Length: 278
Image (cartoon, rainbow, N blue to C red; front, top):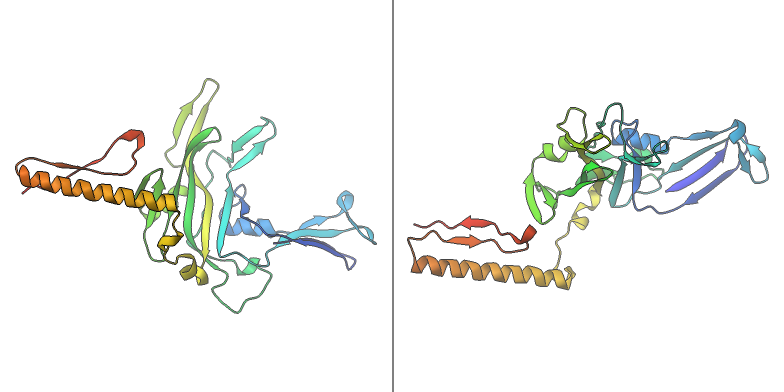
C-alpha cells in the first residue's frame, strides 16, 4: 500500500510504501464494501490553513491519499463496527440512524479499480469470500463465531467453539449484514437498556487465481504434532466405543444400546446417538 502527498501547483510528491495485515473499512456512512473502498482511497485536499510544507517549495496546496499497488492472496477486511465516543470517553458499537446499520458484503468482488498496478491476468483482482467472523452482542461483551467455506465448491460451515454445523447462504450473508428490523435482544442494566445484535466484523477473501494453492490439501506432516495426536486419540476412542457397542448389541440384542460421542464437549457433557437395534 502506498501513502502519498502530492502537490497541486508544483512538481513534488512525498510517498511511503508499506505492507498491511488487514484493511480497516468504515461502516459508518457506507452501505457496502465497494462504498467503503471508495471512501478509503478518496483524496483529501490540503489547502488554506492546512497546506502541506513541501521541502524546497514551502507551503503548498496538495492532495493526500493512498493507493494499493498489490493485494495479497488472502485479503482480510476489518469492518469498523466500533468507534470511539468522545462524549462518553469510551468505545461504542457503531450506530447509524437507529441501532444497527445494514452493511452488505459480496460473495465475489473485483478490486481492479483500486489497484494502481496493471495486470494481464483477469482473475488477479477477483476475490471470493471464504470466511466471515461474526460478533453477537455489544461493546461490553458478546459471543464470537466463524463462518467458513473450506473448499472452492463446498458448503459453508459455522465454527462455534467446539461445534461445527452446516449453514445456509442466508445465515452467511443476510443474517450478518445488520439491520434495524432484525430481532434484537434487549439487555437491561441499572443505568439503561442496550440492544444486542449480530453482524460481521471481519471478512476473509481469497484471490480467485490462487484458490488451488490456498486450498491445497493439508499433508499429515504439516499438522501440529499435538493436534495430530489429539485427532488420532479421538479416532481410536471412537473406534473402541463402536466395537464395544457392537459387542453389547450381540450379547443383549433386545436392549437399546447408546453410543457416546467422543471428543471434548462443553461442561464435560456428552451427546448420545442411538444405535438401531433390529
